[in-house]
Length: 320
View (cartoon, helix red, strand yellow):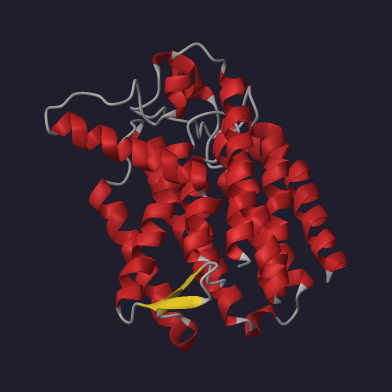
C-alpha cells in the first residue's frame, strides 16, 4: 500500500506541474483574473492581474489519480462521499469566482447564498453517510466517547461550513493556505493509514502531491491563485476527513492555523460591532504581521511552521 500511496503522490504532483502552465496561459487569455478581497491590505492590490481558479487542478487531479489507482473506489462509501464533498464545495467556490470574474467586482455569491449551499451539501453528506455517520465523539486519552445523538448532525454541519470558510479566510497570501493544508493533510494521511482506510489515504496522498505542485506556481510571486474554488473545497475535504476518520476533536488542533485565523476574525467583528473597537491590528491575522514589519514570505513560512507543529500535536492526539 505504501507503494500505491507513493504512486498517487507522484502522479498528482507531475500532473499539476505539467498541466498548470497551460492552464495559467488559458486563464490569462480569457482574463480570468483575481479580484482582491476587501480585507486585503492596499499593497496587495497589484495581485488583481493574477489568474484565479487554480484550485480546479488540485481538485480533479487527486480524484482522477485515486480512481485510476484504486479500481474498486466506488465500493468505498466514505471515500466516495469525501470526494463528492470535495467537488461540491469546489463548485460553490467556482460559482463564486466565476461571478466575480464575469461581473468585474468582488461580490460573487452573497454570504447567505454561499452559506445555504454549504449547508445543503453538508446535509447531503450526512444523509448519505447513513449508518457510517458516528453519533458520538471520541475523547482522546480518556478512551470514552461523548454520545451526541442527533446533535452530531449539527456538529457535522458546523464543521463543514466552519472549515471551508476558515481555509477561505486563510487564503490571503501567496502559498499560505495551500502550505498549511499540506501539513494538515499529512496528519490525516497517517491517521487514515493506521486506521486501515487505504482509499482515503490514497486520496490524501494524491492531494498532497497536487498541492505541492500547485505551490510551485503559487509561492511568492504567485502566478496563480486557488480562489474560492480551491479554498472552500480544501476546507470541506478536511472536515469530511475528520468525520470519516472520527477525529473531530483532533481536527481542532490539526487545523490550528485555520482555527486561529477564524477565531481572530470573529473576535474582531464582535468587538467592532458592539462598539468596543479593534482587538487586533488587522484581521485576518496574517496581515497584522505584515503591518508590524514582517515580509510576506516570512509570515507564510512562520505560519507553515506553526501549522506543522499543530498538525504533529493533532496527529498525536488523534491516535489516542
